[in-house]
Image (cartoon, rainbow, N blue to C red):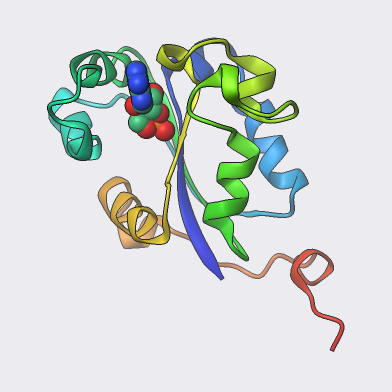
Length: 152
Ligand code: CMP
């Protein structure tokens, strides 16, 4: 199954949304494989957001992600990258669908609560950046066949 990277940003942590966000991924049957509560250094933020260097919002983005603790996670499931992105909602909260995390809890892009990998390739890079291999637990969740099982 596919793994993806998710990070609850400082606004999500400060607003007490860690539990709510985890619940939403658990409700979809996704499997938590790793979690880490940490403060991100400027150097680390620059590595994570390297693809955005030079964009007008880059400096603000680095300041935002380093402004307080974040909660980083790895989630697993069939098409986990797409499933998590769907649950998270569009980057701009005003364009996110009702029922998504960003729609339900945020109002603007500069405070969009959460980051999720946008492709399988990005997920691999981000998981390797944020977690050591021995911090990732691949396990059999007993309810998974009731979520990801086939009828054949
Ligand atoms: P995230 O999923 O963390 O990935 C990159 C981040 O850059 C994104 O969420 C937003 O927080 C931010 N971002 C993307 N586009 C813009 C934009 N046009 N203006 C400001 N911030 C942006």
